Image (cartoon, rainbow, N blue to C red):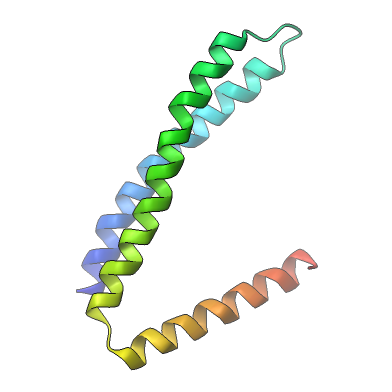
Length: 95
């Protein structure tokens, strides 16, 4: 059941992330110009921000659904694994 939740949300996450990345490329391209078109910049930002919000909400929905499936012990183990992963990322970043 957890795999089904993950797979469903992973597809949405990939789609949203791709759309955001494309908008970021367009935004950087516009901003790199000598005289960027500010109305285009504004338009790109207005398209990107709702997608970023949706991406964040999608992550929260995934966690919520997964939490409903897992037992308390499994939730604690998952939390511990996340915390350890964050510690490893900080070490890799030199933090």
